[in-house]
Image (cartoon, rainbow, N blue to C red):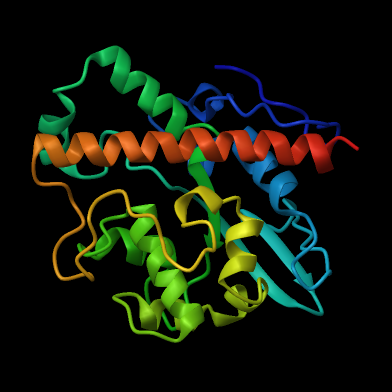
Length: 249
């Protein structure tokens, strides 16, 4: 198992680092990779659109990342924004078998790099599902980041979506970014929207949440995966460019 960076001396983020490499076998990198948590803290401890800094701490007991200031108090958790090769169960395994093992491993490695992760509020409110849980449990979202981003866009536009109630419970988190453009820019998601950020660039044709978000054929899965890989590669490049401009000044 690799040893990750010392969080007190970290000066740059390795955008190719695979978070599985410093995670104990059989455990989830979102909870158990120390490098992933440090990268999250460094990546998202930066100025918000309003100018205030969203400083994150790893020191709060029983909390992945924590922020408390005049902006409010936030308990954050990690989530991967890629389905990997297990997130859709047996059906996905059959679809993925049309790719070589080398291709599948390249996809897993990309999804387990910094390009494939994001943070959400991790605290339950009224004992109801968190955003992370709700987007995985709702078949119309199916844990897909493009469909998740559409419900975020609708939240800011005050439009209904399958996760309207869930996102409304965490309105104070989304208020941090002021609007959809602010959210997109903060989390380096520009390559998942059209240039003016008025619409999401979906991985598959979008039917307005009328059907399941899970690909149903080898062809649709291949199209989804190609677009997904292109997005992750572009986001990796954006994060690398951002740290050149900001992190290592």
